[in-house]
Image 1 (cartoon, rainbow, N blue to C red):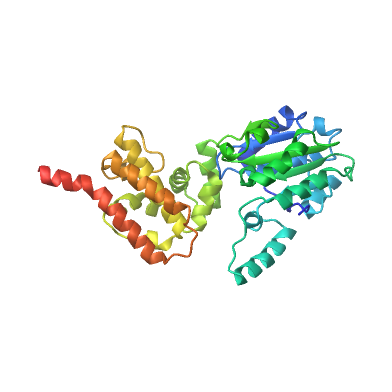
Image 2 (tube, one colour; image 1 turned 90 degrees about the vertical axis):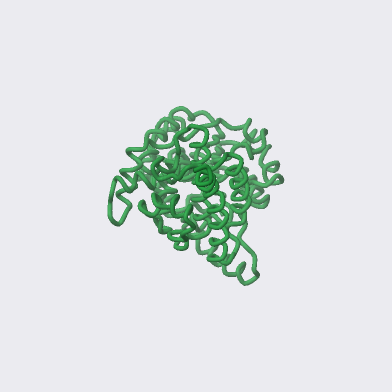
Amino acid sequence: MSEAIATTPLWPWLKEPLAAAIQQLATHHAVLLHGAQGIGQFEFAMHLARSWLCEGHPTPQGAGIACGRCPSCHLIDAGSHPDLMVILPEALQAALGWGAASAEVSEKAEKSEAKSKKLSNEIKVESVRAVVQFSQHTASRGRAKVIVLHPAERMNLIAANTLLKTLEEPPGQVRFVLSGATLDELLPTIRSRCQAWQLPVPDTDSAAQWLAEQMDKPSLNDAQVILAAAGGQPLTARDHIQLGLDASAWLSLPKAVQQGQPTPLTQWPLPLVVDALQKLCHDLARVSVGSEPRYFPASALPTPPELNLLTTWSQELRKLSRHAEHPWNQNLKIETLLLQARAILRVRANSKARAA
């Protein structure tokens, strides 16, 4: 658990915020990073920790972005820095490239599958107790000891309460980086012990340019469509591309749903289908009250039904999103969702036909 992952990428849009954070957070022992998902919170947290531990700077307080050449940086790259502890839920370790720990997680996954149990999405009290124990030892390399905990809101109540005392009065040279998206789910006592730092969403042009470079057939226009579909979050957009989403399918989705056509939904995993329908519902609700849509171009949207119908639809989709990873019958579930969506989206069209 004390092993760090191998080198994490520093995405282009994180470089300036990282330099500012290193300068402004130099004297704080506990930092709480927050911002939208899909913009690189974990990578930012790791590079902040890496910079604090970098031995290419005179002191941690005078640190800049890590040099990448000193013994400390090489130890982090090798996943064996003795003064760095990274705490993640089991279910996130392999997904975030947990290096040496990934093999352990894979082994756990196989055993859990055999027992019909899922890997935990929580940060449990056992992990936090290990943090407390880790913090009580002197820094091996005499620089600092850094603990990265992500996502902070995944700590259960017992784990969060166990962390409080150490977070308030960390011994010696211990520093914390907590990161997360939904800070309202954190205990106020945790938030009050940390210096908050908001990670901004990258500007659209640079994020779209980066995303286009990740595509098999680079296209800035397609990248802009998929970036908007991901709410401006480039890493989420990249993941959506890997799951099979493309710009033309996204643009045709609203009218295909209105007409009850399953394509392209049948080609996507159910969580992505539910997410797409939630975004369609969201944009239709915005249009119905005179606002601009967020995820789809206005020209791609059908005439929205009444707001109360969209509110009901949104509530149903929200309930389903909590269980979208359940092993449903994919085709049957998508057919049910399409019937529901078509019934709602055709209400206005039927009303207009009767009026005519």
